[in-house]
Image (cartoon, rainbow, N blue to C red; front, side, top):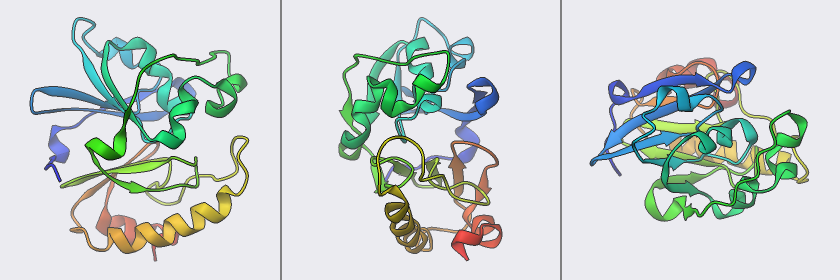
Length: 199
């Protein structure tokens, strides 16, 4: 598991009113962009290439991919179809249809991940030594919705996911940071204190 300091993260608020947390960091000479929301391009150097990490395939977390010079894109196999399908990524509900024919790499083969189905079938929590990118699975004081999109049965999956990751999170140091797709960033210690789903 790669070590990543919270102080090494650059955090941008993207996707307008949807208020997505997009995270950027450098590791081993590569610049990674986690969940690039719409508008991230204005903060990035157009002459550079970026590796993109997608925690899940919803519109607000993938729309900014089109603004970046992407070298590699990492996503779960279950959510890979979301890149191309507006019905799945929910962009059909916005004025900005997202349908990208882009090659992708299986996120589980390159990063330490925790399977987190519920918000989407292929949601992942990406784990670094010190930082957890939780996407829309876990927020500082609640959990993500499981009633979005066209796939049924996600509520039961989310319930199992939260039980599982609660056990896993308790094994990590309490000073590690939880970096969600929206809202406040908290330490694990604070998450277990203020999030009713983790008490």
